[in-house]
Image (cartoon, rainbow, N blue to C red; front, side, top):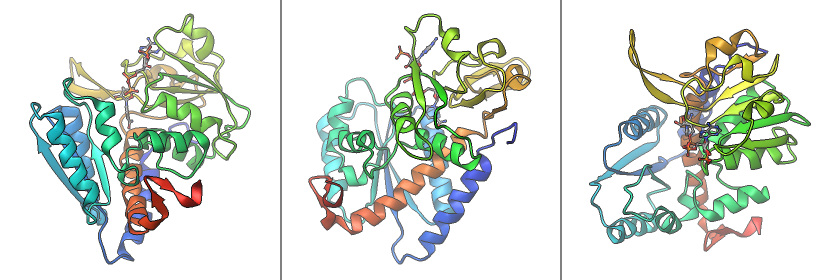
Length: 300
Ligand code: NAP
């Protein structure tokens, strides 16, 4: 197995497959991103989606709204997009301003168009192991495991972080009875006591806590596989603004069996998976008779 688990060949493979699928279609898949405010990290992600989408033949439209937008106006906008048959996928870019009720807003998105997989119907289907959208970052971790043929069955996997978009879905997916599942999972968080006791026992350690260079060599087991989901912007005295992960890559390099880099690891796969979800949603929306109130009849 490679020491450096790059995400780039995986993203390249996904884009190539998507491009071939899109070329066969008459109608371009269309994603609408709702972007409120001006968060720079979110703006960067949206730019990447627009750029990559354009390259492979997905129409990506970003609708920008001021931070003062009222909840009712936002919900009206989502309802219009739900009704619009030319829109196959809707993405609500986070973070949302604090005056908006995030859960109430996500509930309004048609689950068939919910490519971020934040709607409770999609989350429920994922937990039950039914066919559903899978949030792109956890799905990126699974793609990496598959690509590098990393066995998870019977392995001790420790996840650092229990967020709704990374840690929790990932724990559920790694528990599934399938190729990238059957693992024994421990999820750690900010209240975990004696964290190192858990991290040192991990065959596979997945860091998703948002703390730059947090995981050091002394925290990991000899020959562990380390997957770094973190993306943290820091100021380097020589290089200026740079992005680092949650794992101290250089420190862990000598001890781990293999590691994902940041940048060029999980982040690069995530964008490709989101766009793959858009292509999938275009197929679902076209065959929308299979859905009643967001429930796929075939999956009941
Ligand atoms: P989040 O919502 O802030 O959640 C962070 C999690 O880490 C929480 O569960 C928190 O515990 C836990 N945590 C914080 N400090 C800890 C500590 N000292 N020890 C153990 N656990 C600790 O973050 P997120 O949205 O999941 O993102 C995590 C990281 O992944 C960030 O760097 C983010 O930029 C990155 N990210 C990357 C991608 C990608 O595509 N590569 C996508 C999404 C996010 P509590 O629950 O107790 O607070």
